[in-house]
Amino acid sequence: MKLVVMGHSMGGWAAAYVGGHDPDLMGVGLISAADIGMIGAAPRAMAVKIVDDNIGTGAGMHTLAATPDGLADEAIRNGKAYGVAGDAPGLARRPLLIVTSDDGLAAVGDGLAKAIGDGAAPVTQAHIATDHSYSDRRIALEATVLRWLENLPGAPAGL
Image (cartoon, rainbow, N blue to C red):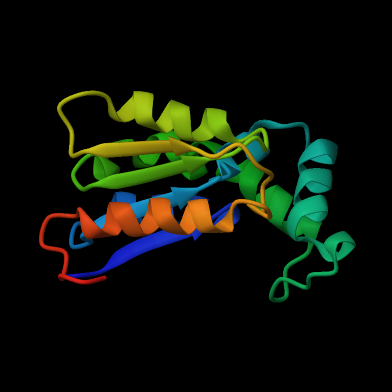
C-alpha cells in the first residue's frame, strides 16, 4: 500500500493513533502533535479549558455535535489509551516523521521518539523554530515533509 497518514496538532494525535494501529501504512507524519492522554491526565476544569481553547466553541469551532465538556470527559475516561506513547509499538514498525516547533508540544514528539527507541523503523525528527501554525516557516515545513516523503522506501519517483 502506498498510503501515508499525516496530521498537525490534534490531527497529529489522530495520525499517531491510526499509524499505531494500521500495519499497512507506508509511513506516518506528525506535525506539532498534541497528546490527548495529557489532556485526560489534567484536572477536569483544566481539561475542559484546554479543549475549549483549542477546538471548542471558544475558538469559534463547532466540532461535530461534541462539546468541550464532553470531549474533556472522554479524554479523562480514556487518558491512558489515548496517549501517544501507547501507539509507539505500532509506529515503530514503519517510517515516522516527527516535526516540532516552539509551541510547547515538542516534548510529545521527543517522548514518542524515545518510547520507540533504537532498532525500530527510521524515525526522522525535525525542529522548526516557529509558532504552532508554522506561520513564517511554511516553506521549511513543506520542504521537510517532501524530503521525508521522497526518501520513504517504495516512494514513487518525482513527488
